[in-house]
Image (cartoon, rainbow, N blue to C red):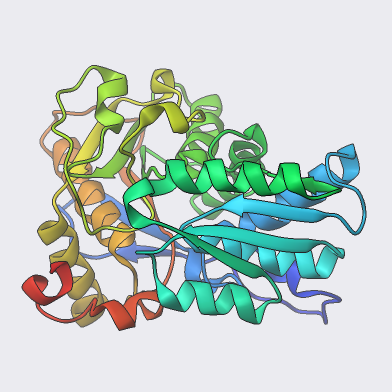
Length: 326
């Protein structure tokens, strides 16, 4: 994993093959592993879809050579797309709600992309609408639309899922991952269930998000601090397939913050709040496997840590929970 024994021609060739590392804070007899996506060149899981989606779209003629990619994004997707666009000869414009990480927006700019902010109150729905307006105004422009494009899911079906199974020799009992667009979990889940239909699949969302409604679970909509996962409008998240998911785990901000602090202090993982939430949920699933509440083909749980805490230092991610959440 992440060992490159020959010189590479492009930064795009360094995407994927990220480490799978054991998380030690779990119940006896059930191992938890996390895929460390900060090892990608743009330091997040979204590098995978940046390369995969744009390469496929160029091949299919969805965007012409030298065209423009316009995407609504909270940041990491913009970085992944900007990295790939620059290498593939495409221009990039990203529409980002104001409240999201300043670090991410600075990195998109550094990679040669244009960043356009929309009001926080309009949410991702507002960013999506603005992206499509811009695409209509420009020639040779396309909105990949990570929230609806099946290529998002395909990227993880083709790369992340197989990497996990190769690393564990197929001994995967449960897959647990956060849902923003849902592409990461859906791609891994589809691959996992093809290997063994008894694999347990858990989706992770912040408390206050509404993904659970798609599994007829009660949810009360509310604000949350966890970035990159969750939804206030399930109609914009077209990739989520409830038939592939056994349960959705709503994680409170405070629990996610406590776990990201623990991961740094005890295990040396510098990760964002979505990874904190994924860690909490993965440990809950592991406990349920250990107690016999959940039956799985193997006593292992795999989750995904999408990015690094360095993206959120300006937001006080390692300050007290009260300071971070205010």
